[in-house]
Image (tube, rainbow, N blue to C red; front, top):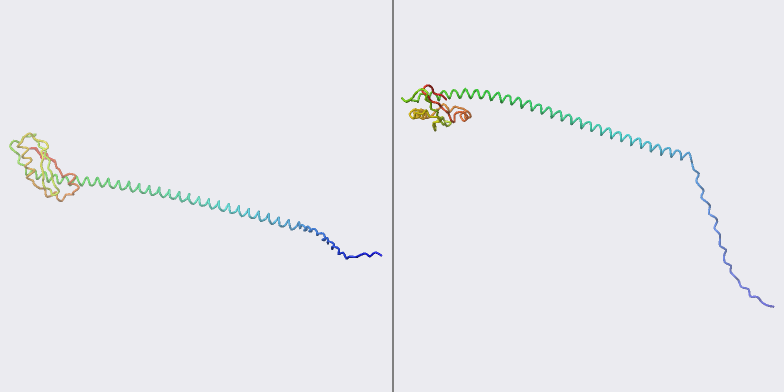
Length: 210
């Protein structure tokens, strides 16, 4: 007999086939809940729009109120400026009227004071004048007497000659003999500078004129 050699053969294990994966179940859609959520979302959007509109209107009202306030302030400032200008104009006109009136009063007072000083000078010159024998009617000599504030005579100039040297010389001597009109020291300096720094005097046999 033939002998057969037996050998133990290890068989490869069979691959296990994984069970098929279960398909995920689709969640059931809760339509009522979805509607409620959509309604809430729309309500929220509507509320936001209303809030935004209210804010816009509020800002517009504030801006309008601010503009009206500024316009009111501008009108009040313009009114105040007009009132101030009118007040200044009135005050200026009043001050000018007072100044003009005071100027007239000052001129009248100056004229009265000047006349009194002229009379004094005329009297003093007349007292000092010795008419020469050559004096004749119609003769006239015009001289200019220069004075200082103390009333002192500092110069005599013949502006217009009578044509007679002796007559002219007697006129000059009358002015120089006066030497000083002390009364002029009490005169307003303004009046002295205006009227008596230089005094023109006309001498004639009939009259003596300033």
